[in-house]
Image (cartoon, rainbow, N blue to C red; front, side):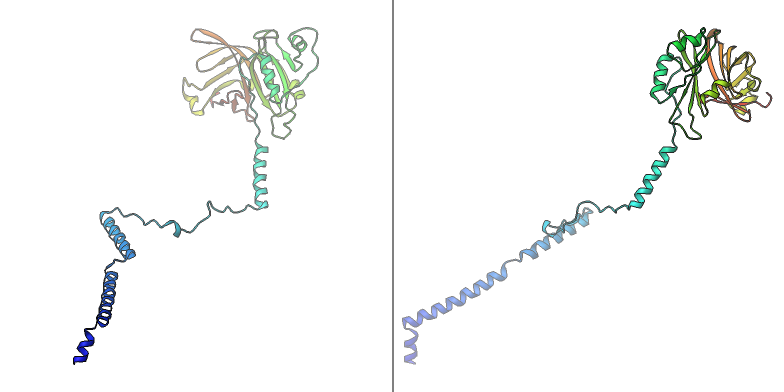
Length: 311
C-alpha cells in the first residue's frame, strides 16, 4: 500500500494521467460538436419543401427551375424533312401550268383619252398596230394614215366622226386567247379620243372585212333588254335598255342614234346623242350579242342585259 501511494503521487505519473484525461475530454467534445452541426443539404431541402408547400397552399406554386449544370443541351430549331427531287419537280410543274393558263385580256386605256396617248400605252402592252390597205387620197383615213396611224381601218365624216383602229398581239397564239384589239374613237381625224374598245379571237383581216357602217341598229339587237329577267316586269326598272332602229334608251337617259358600226352579225358600236334631266352628252356603247341572241354584254363595263320575254 505504501509503495502504490508513493508511485501515484510521483510527478511523472500525475502528468501522464492528466494528459490522458485531457485527451479523452477533447475527443468527447469533438464528437459532441460534430453531432450538433446541422446537415446543410438536408436543411436546404427542408426549406424548399416548406416553401413549396406554402405556395401550393396559397395557389401560387411555381415550377422548380433546374440549375444550369443539370440542363441537357438541345439543338436550336427543328429538323426540316428533305423534299425529294420528284416532289419538287411536281410542285414546280403545277405552278408553271397555272401561270401558262392565266391570260390577262385587259387593256390599260381610258375613255376620252387622246388616241395618241392611248396608242402609246397599247403598244407598251405588247399590241402591234395592224397596217391595213393604204386609203384613198381624201378623208379621215388618209389624214390619220399620213400621221403614222397605219392601223386605221375606217372613219365616218358625219356625226361624231367615229374611226376604227386594229391591233394584234403576237404572243397570244392559243386557241382561246384574244389576240385582236379593236379601238373606236370619236372626234374625226383632227382630235380622235377613245370611245370604246374590245378584244376577241380572230384575225384583223377578217375583222376589217366584216366591219361596216350601217344606218341603224340591226334587227337582231333591237328590243327590250334588262339587267335581270325579273326586271322585265317592272315599269321603270333601273336595268332597262331599249334598242330601236334609230334610238337608244337607258334608265335615266335616251336619245337618237348618230352612227352604228357593225362587226359581223354579233357586235355593234353605237354612237348616240343622249339627253338626261335637261342636259345632253355623247355616248359610245358597244354591244356583243350571245350566240342564242338572248343576252347582250358590254365588253368595256362587263354589264349584261337579257332579252325580255315580251320583246
